[in-house]
Length: 238
Image 1 (cartoon, rainbow, N blue to C red):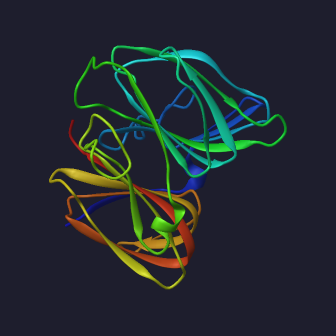
Image 2: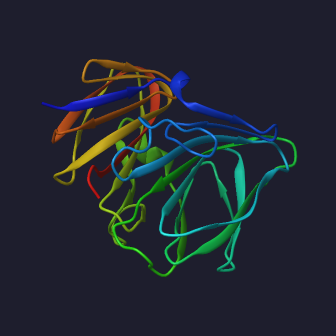
Image 3: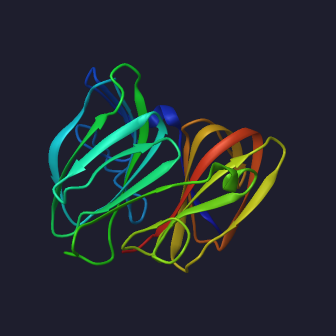
């Protein structure tokens, strides 16, 4: 029988630094909850809003797969590998921090806030050579269907990471249903509702709610209101 866990949006940790407002699904920074450390290999899921002209100064990472998905606006990136880029709504960015990388991120607009999801996944191999990639997604490819945006395979759809993980975005109209088939034994899926309302395994999820499901090979998503959501399939043991 499937195992599940529900994280209502209001239960998340929160950081308000004035220029940055961040909601933490899992323990991060000043938010610590021993029951919310990770979901399998999924370590961080932050829902960030950065004021115009503000951002994160240079800071280090190592041995982590870091994914950024802008929901509104653009985020300017610069790193110690001399990558300089702007990731906009509709893009996905990935960094394999590996042996170590420094980077900084700033809102590319001086007035309007940028919103993005910052996601960290534990890698399945340590001390790899750091790597950066980004991709512009076709939004039509997720209208009333699931669009794969990340996998372990460099030749597959989307970006890739050093982990047996698959991410999908969906944008569905009210009244529809879709089934998700897990790709690997021992994996689970964490569902994050970007907006709208869905139901999985009897649980209703609304905007910014999170839901984990594992010990199953598939599940059905019912669309209660027009909805956009992110599915993150990750190993439960790593």
